Length: 390
Image 1 (cartoon, rainbow, N blue to C red):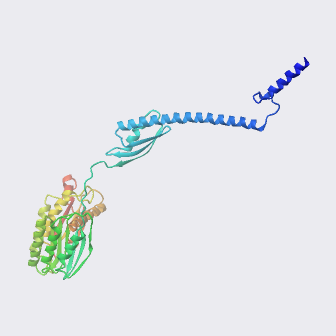
Image 2: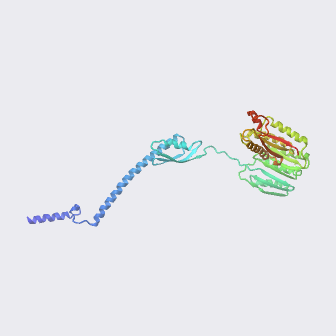
Image 3: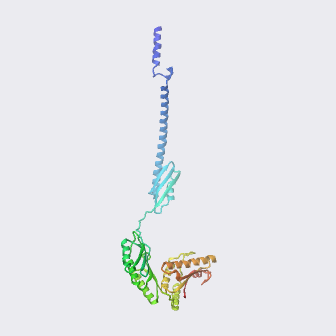
């Protein structure tokens, strides 16, 4: 019996030493066993966190994708086809373009009221969506100034060939030719005929006008020729030649050739005054309200006045500005001066010389009608022209 009992105890001891037995049966744990347990715990924690993160991430991503899809649908329904949406949580970030008359705030409003949207941010940029028109490049005026056998040319031409054309045309008449101020403007649209006609005019009148200046503007369709000669008959002959050339081109013209040291006759002064009075009678040089900006009607009247002034180029003139009584007296003086100077600027821009005019502003001090009625005030707001002696 004793032998069987000892054998049974040893069998138990043998089996309990097996590594697969419970730890409580081991007498001692080694280091490898401790490390294996810690690794198992760490790996388990990482797997758990990964599962939690994936659930949150993919759940949030699904919500954001849903918001973006609904936002795109709302924007498309409102006509915003060029706007992109990026959902970050409950906030939408818009980017893209606005076309025609679309407004950024309307795009924001189209998605701000969607369920789940907490805020809308971003920036949308307007873009041109119409049909682009070809823009014609037009150069500035060409200016040719001469004295004796020397001429200077300034301005723009379309090509080197056109520049050579100018040189070849003028070098026969002018032995000294300065063309450093005449440059080639790439893309410039040339109107055929006007440049050659102007050069031909200068060559024809040069023997009669040894010193002069010609300005031709293809953009403004204007030809201006200035100079001085000894008598009125020659002046008239030259001015007629200049006018004829401009008429053939369809250009406006200012034939500003003057008779040297010959003042206007009393008859010329009186005739000019009659013409100016007739033009202004019942009409006004119109400006924008409380402004010195000329209106279209104002410039139309000034164009008629220019014709009268050009009929008597030796006669000087006074430009007087007047206002009604509204506003302070000091302010009205300033406004009347500004309006008179605006008229002067328009005349100069159309070829007249600043030296020909005196400018004054009288404010409200010289009314021609009552300021108590709208009609009277309208008559008092005026520009007057006076032909001057001397």
